[in-house]
Structure formats: C-alpha cells, structure tokens
Image 1 (cartoon, rainbow, N blue to C red):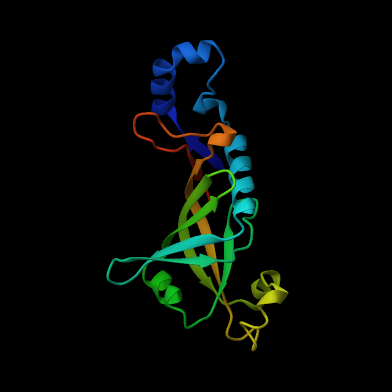
Image 2: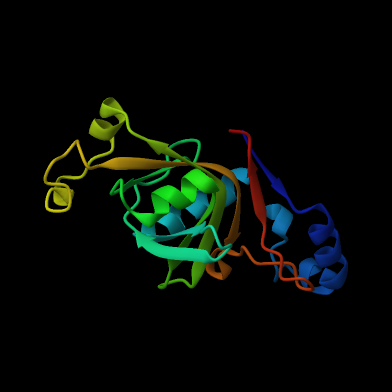
Length: 180
C-alpha cells in the first residue's frame, strides 16, 4: 500500500499562491495523486538507468556507489547484485537502512528512495535477478554472487517538468510512504 504526505505543504502553497491558482497557472501538490507520484517515480527511475546506493559504514560515514539495479517491482522493491566480499555487504549487515538516489539528467528530476536492505543468497532469486552481461563479473555464478533486496519505507520525488515540486518555504519534496 502506498500513501503520500503533503497536508500542511498543500495548505501553505494554496494560501501563498492563490492568485495564480485561480488563474490556473500553478498545479497544487495535492493534484499529484498517489498514482501520479508513483508513475512519475517509475518514469524517473527508468530514465535514470543507474542509481546511487548509499549505506553507512561502521564509523557513521555515508558510502555511495553507482549500481545497476533492476527496475522496482509493483511494491517498489529494488534488487541489486553484488560480490559477497564487497564492503557494502558488511555495511548492510551492520545497518540495513539505505537510500537509493535516481537522477534523470534530461529532466533534472530525481527520486530518493529510503528503505531496509537485506542480503539474499537464494538460488531461485539469483536466477530471477540475473543479467547475462554480468557474466564477466561473476565467472563462478551462482557462487560468488549475492543479491541485495531493498524494501522501501518512503520516497521523495522532484520533477518540475511533471509539476512535482517541493514546498515553497521548506523545499520539502512530496513524499510517498509504503506499507511493505
């Protein structure tokens, strides 16, 4: 189940921009329904191609790396591949809270997805989440190959070209909450 959170932002935006709203020149954030926000997020994620996976190391330092993720499923769960000896595996085992940042340069749109990561070492899942172009990286597949499954908690979306913008005072983007 997906829900969004924009009550106060919508009220403030409406009061501040009432003259423009009456003339039809500005789209209220509340006009972006849950389905529209999720649809826009899927478009941005698809256009971005890759994303940045951000985890926290044992010293509390954010560690970011570009990842070739699978597109989110119907519940916006995202899957990645990784080497079992990579630093991110240990970081996720110590602190499973991660963020995924997708940026579509062509439209200057982004999605920031925050969720809980799990390390998955299951043969049937590995078969479902495999790309032939990864053979050079995983010559002993399915050994030496792990999956990271990110179950979303919330995501922020900004896409001016789609009329999805942040609060004019705080710049807080629209947020979609997940019930996964």
